[in-house]
Picture 1 (tube, one colour):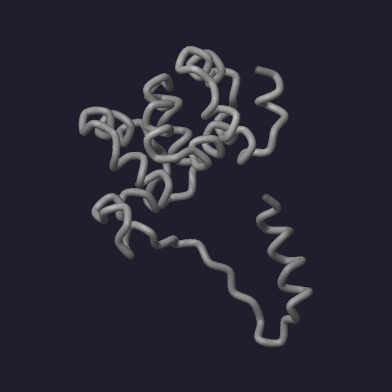
Picture 2: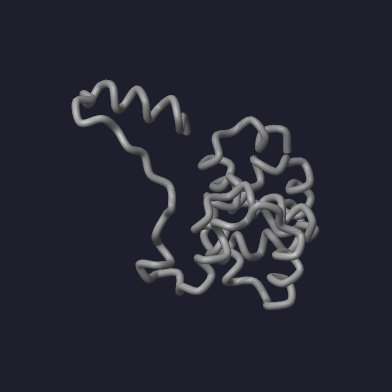
Length: 138
């Protein structure tokens, strides 16, 4: 499982998808909160849903807070209501996620992101690209 830790998040998700259910369950505890969030964001919805079955609710709450709000809301929307209630109770600082839960996944409200970047009108394309790489290097 050491190789999983060294891969880019997109590659982690691809490799994780190829693992058996047992291998997935044993590899998840080795990932820290940000890595788990990145992994879940890279998985297909049904794969992420299966993966969270092996994550304790307390860790899941931390992972959901770390995820992009729209991705976290999509995952929460697919979980059983009891698990959603428990995860919500454990989540700190989830103000950006909860409003998105009222929208189906594939609607404008379900796809919207609350993150945006503003640039000055006189910013060149080169400056904009350099800035974007600094604020979001993935």
